[in-house]
Image 1: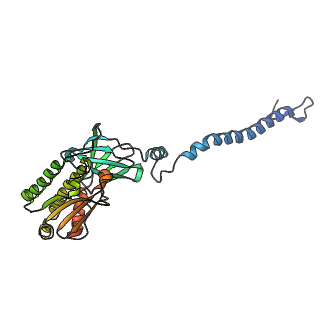
Image 2: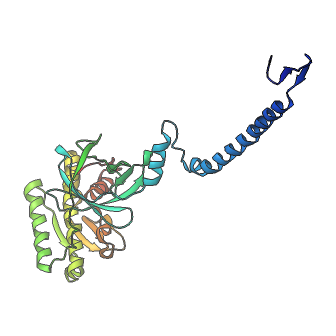
Image 3: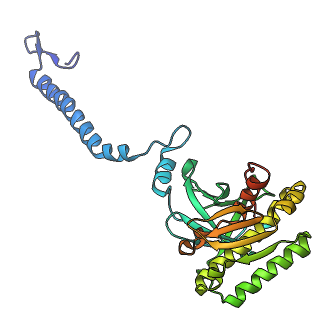
Length: 298
């Protein structure tokens, strides 16, 4: 009759150790002792690389989200037509590595946006002034920033859009555009500004004239933006500028030469070869009234 494990009373009534049972129990203990570390090491070997591959997303970011952010941080922005409600509709087109073209419905200007990284895997698409135009989340959600909505408004994807072709125009078409811009500024702003293009531009190829047309119209829109944002500066503009001229240059610039606002463009650099209307607005402000404020508008 057993009293406790491993010890029994023998036939003579004495106490003895159940050695076989004790030996068996000891083997079980030893097997458990040696087996558990082996299993643990094997588990670490298998799970270790997976665990090490989990990026640190920082405080407040779950590990699963951190993996998503690391894998999709600089993915492409979906090109197409978007609608931002009261902010209107716009198109986004790919334009080389980390570059996109933004065009608002009802406008001819193509803004070149540069992509920069933001927190939580988002992408910030910025104008050539450095101001943010769009924010794209890691899951593809798009937010549009405008002068009327500096806090941003959500935009929803509507449909794909075909890639726009390069603008090619004739000498006569460019000269007509020049005359139209002069008449428009005179009629709408009541300011006599003479627009012109360098003779070498007029005599150039159709694609160069197309780039000159973009630089010309951007200059006209930039002047109107400047006047709208700085009503008190109208008299300064009238006194210091009486003409606007577009010409080829080594880099896109806006400068004053006497009383002529000289807008230079680089045909070989495509849409990046001329300043946007926002940059022209900003540069006119610097030339006429000092440092400009950040401009976030369409």
